[in-house]
Length: 282
Figure 1 (cartoon, rainbow, N blue to C red):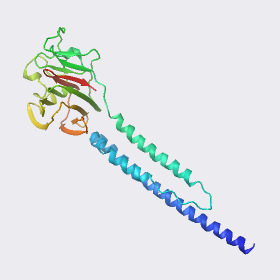
Figure 2 (figure 1 turned 120 degrees about the vertical axis):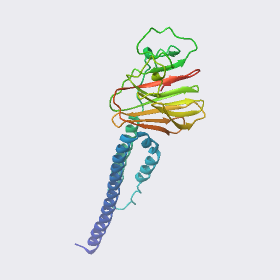
Figure 3 (figure 1 turned 120 degrees about the horizontal axis):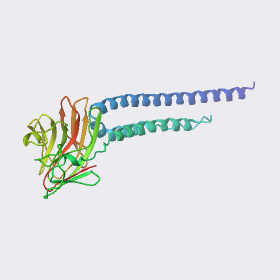
Figure 4 (figure 1 turned 180 degrees about the vertical axis):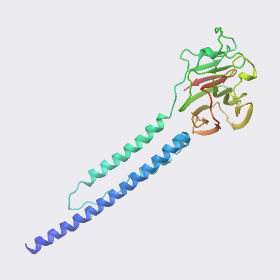
């Protein structure tokens, strides 16, 4: 073989080795990124089980970090033609699919579809036809008598009953007097104080009166926050973990309060709708 041909073969072999080395380096970078994302997904799954909304608050930072990791520098072109662009494109698509899976997982958490139970509504409450909104009325409604109807405080339960699992729902309020929480099925409906949300061992709630928010259970009150405008409230229930968490969702997700207990009965979402107030299940 001629000397110039041997030289060309050595050059091709050298350049090919360089390209292969670069591809191996890129593959290692991709594998490292994929392993890092797998570990993060495991952490996210654990956080989702404990406090999913702390996970949601970290979404933007996490997605930003992942995007930067995906911006892998393209290799410089060489005389040896290998379809590196196609390989990197496929790998980036896989990382993008992982991101989309994360986003879909977070979206699944939001939200439970609830409806108000008309037969529990206090006579001064009007339940909309779609059972998504309840409003205060100065006039008592001609509701038929029912053992489940609240007689004293303007309260109402939802039709939904939870005895296991995790559940999330939102309520948007117009007005300045309300309570949002949960109650056992056995909560009294006909006596005065025993039927008030948060004033017994069978209910947990936050209350809002003209900007002042408190958490209530077993007639024990805890100061929570001062909020200027009527809020939208997100509630997250983890029955097995015994946690009931409240969040303010007006602009950013703000944690308000978390009850920690052991539930011994099925629970209903529960509401008090005070004067000149309406509550909509979002």
